[in-house]
Image: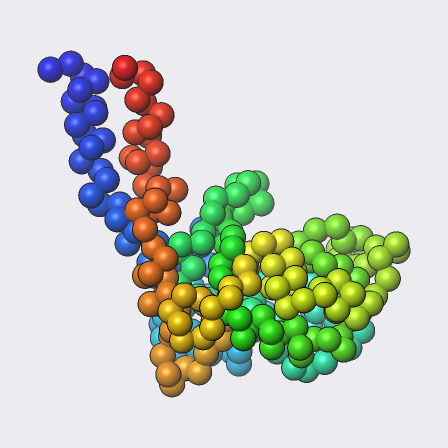
Length: 243
């Protein structure tokens, strides 16, 4: 038997181990996430729901709540005072992104010079987007995509001169616009409601348990797990060489 056929058989032995479970109960390969999830008894305020199983540390959860977050060197109040209900939604979204171990099906590899992985198109429940948008209608911002295009001054991002502060609805006419554009596609506005098992909640009552674990299980699949299974990625690349 030629060496290529032994290699081919070896690669065929890999797929049964890549069944989508690689996408469950995992943390992103990105700062400041932990290498793997686990208990964190001292999580801060809006991050508390993830205390039993978190990808964030207590320090990360505290830094997320600062007026100028040490996580991103970014201030939520870049256009003046943000209404408390609006600010709470952003803190919940940050905690969700940093702490949740249930985002595996939506983790994508990105430019390693910035960070190795990010979340893309995670489906937020209809109510989450609607409430976030409604509670931020009277707050102001100068940009619709907060992940780039800022004017940096003294090491901090500020609004560009040509982009004045305006009410949120100017930049986000609908709840879906807010969910999908604010962090450049990290979230997708789902038409499904909480409790459907088809969408993620960016915050939940800790006493009721984490509903997103079941959602992640539904969305996990072998097709999505290819990016985390090097053997599967190598297989199609080698086929032309073996033919």
